[in-house]
Length: 307
Image (cartoon, rainbow, N blue to C red; front, side):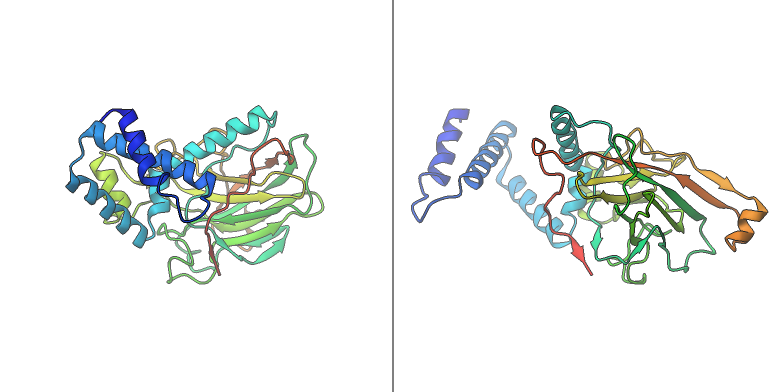
């Protein structure tokens, strides 16, 4: 079939049959385009019926096991959306903010909220892991501190698992919302996160294996940062020194999101914090863009877990 033949066929299937009401123009436009591209790919690659149905079965399994969000990251789809968002902001003249990077599929709404400082961990891993203190200020792009900004933070435990999805962890372990103080500052105590990989027998890793790719992520900490009159920032910081720092299967590592780590062993500081061993400290400031009607919405509408 020629491309014109395929376009005609899709129109017969999806447009000419719209006799039961008024179609949604945007939905129709998107479905017609994606179906046309799919039919064209089947034609160009000479896919067999068995191959097509195996693809449908794969997507059905990925959906049933809640891995489509993970697959979107592993195929670069989520990073591609970020690239487009960066370009849209640049066209609108919005620059100077902390780099965005992918949200991933493991945010949970409703984490406990505090002002200025929070402890993220429930203490169960303190003996095995390295204590981490992270602190900084939320600014606008002109360098003005933003009191009352919200810093939502979440990360994995030492086994690479996230609370809520991992039922062995306490509720909201390693998840908090911190409202910046009168000077725009935030801070938290937690455990240094570890890198992790896709479920080894899961649908995402099975596809990555067929592509000759690993499914590892470097250690990282997720953030949503928001303030009235400013664009919401979705980002992560990566832990410097991780073996997969610049080899992230989800393509989320970016310049500007790898802060240096200081190891603190001063006895006076350890005594003040009631710690018996050295700890890690990360300083990191966030910078938010102003709201702008000419730029696409910074809030992404998607289904998220809530507890």
